[in-house]
Length: 206
Image (cartoon, rainbow, N blue to C red; front, side, top):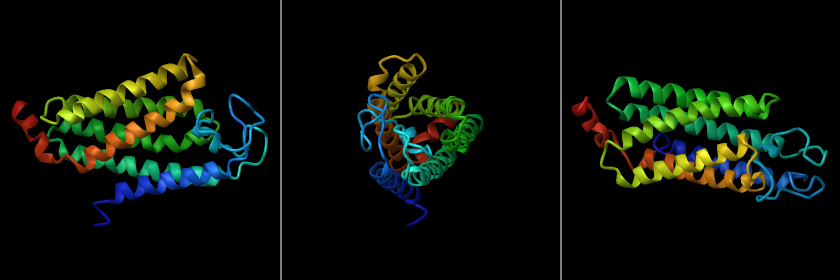
């Protein structure tokens, strides 16, 4: 039972820890450096990771947020590993596994001074894995996941465009939460509502 639901447990623990982190965040956001507390509409997740809050105060949310991120990374890494096992094609399976797990290995470094570089590196690896999964899903009869995969990727690309081109940054903190929601639904759906049997036809088309 624990093995089957370990990914879900990791996600629940991560969300709980991040929520606790938001309650301990002193304040300061991109809109108002003197604001009090964490504002979901104007604070980024990364504001929780620094030793200092945006307003300059000691950031009591720091350790809670990092612990939450680590639970996310473990859960996602295990998802990419398990999902790759459902794919009967060796090359796509390895790409999904290694790029997905690789992304999760670099993600914790987002909380370091290498934030921008690690966002790019981990995000690129994660998108490669997600793109391969989407391409394979489109060769199956998993119609709901076809739509969900496309929408999730579009939201991901939208967030990246806002981040890298400094476009409508005022909405980026909100989009960040929307993206997390879509990715979690996508990941948990593929983990618990698909099986190797859904992809067996890929071997026949090889």
